[in-house]
Length: 164
Image (cartoon, rainbow, N blue to C red; front, top):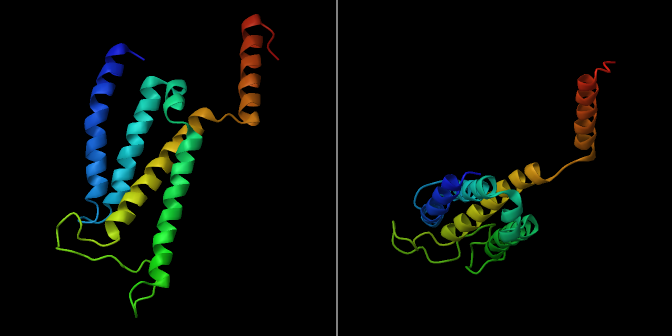
């Protein structure tokens, strides 16, 4: 990749990441922002993979590590749901019961478990889309290798004049 694009990418990654984290953290004030922040995080990681190359990105953030982070966030989300189900509050025992205090409206800590769930959702979505893109770029199936090899053989035969 061109050095100018690498330099510009390394400059804009920081502000993009701050904005993505802002969207995730304040996601409980506007509906659906955990998903949007996760997509922003995934787009930053995908941009790094495209610009800096998959080998260098794999050194910094391996796909197996990303999958472990995603699994831990998903387990934490399920654990929060079961804490609400088995209940801290008397008479309120249902899945994802808001067992934390809700605070003042329109403040950062005003949503009980909702900000925590939004952050976990942002992590799950971001790592999920990054993993999907990473496996589409990195993973190579035997059938794809066969198709590429047969296409190369066909091109070599056409160049040498041995058309079949």
